[in-house]
Length: 407
Ligand code: ADP
View 1 (tube, rainbow, N blue to C red):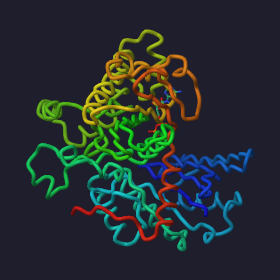
View 2 (cartoon, rainbow, N blue to C red):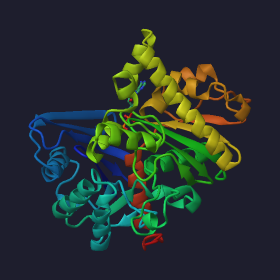
View 3 (tube, rainbow, N blue to C red):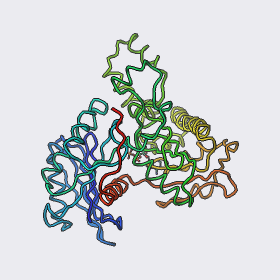
View 4 (tube, rainbow, N blue to C red):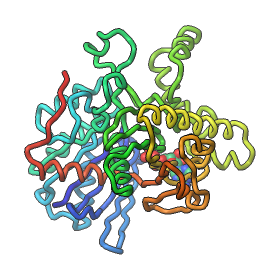
């Protein structure tokens, strides 16, 4: 069975075709700057050792056109003969609210719920919804599956996911912590359990990409996570502030008359590494550090310190710690950042092995001292593969797994 995975962002569309159950990628692709005159299409067809790359710059006016390009690239490269050749499409959907704790087969009711959750994820859910609609039109005979970023965190206890504000905001407006990056945290924590050879692991999964989040996982279940109602709280990120005292927001609104949209822009797009050091790319900030730049040094220290604080609190929440997992762009590649985060944590049993930490690899690896109580692992994430796996499992299990429906 071939499964096409569609991962649509606010202005980009990533896709991958997998042969299942052998999990072989047959192609990967990315359409960037959708809606602009100079959209960029990059497609890679993978046939054993032979990789063929197609690149084009042209205007892709919307996601519907984007999906048509995906179909043309799949047919032109001989991966499918016609639209009936594709049996399953797995869609990444950012917000599943409290409706979805697992992947689901998309039907009209699921689509309505995804669209209804747009108020909670205005940049993502409407685009995810559109891509589902286009996919249904283009591939009418394929089963469409939704895999939610929030689903993995639906196991958090109520005392972890509620905010201490009047109850009606939860019951009437669904204001609570949902958590994000769930597909990545689920994927890497399962790889960690396999690596460690046991399921009852207490671990902390740290996803450090452009967006960053940290999750406490016990026995394969998320019990707390740093992102909340939206993907803004928690760690210092590329352009997002992470945790900030809400009185700062009120103060800026009062003193500078900032509107909600202006505050949104400031905290989501102008803060984090970018706001502190002038670049949202950790590689640039690390280069600035090498040349003795103070702002870069401070940004890096703040980034590491925030993670350290979360490791401490999640170790308390878990009542112990067996493993820490680093993943995504920074987590997988930046040895110095991993070193800064783990330094001075011997009390918790965390001790890196300097040499294994420096090794560059795209494979799962252990970077802690052999004698340390906590295993520190680097595990490359693969959200697209996780979506393909969940879609495959769901269809195999037919009928779909039980869903948690709270409202
Ligand atoms: P996204 O959230 O967009 O999927 P990624 O997982 O690709 O993000 O991570 C992007 C971040 O990873 C950027 O800050 C980038 O600088 C950082 N990164 C990528 N490669 C390296 C590297 N070799 N060393 C340090 N940081 C890196």
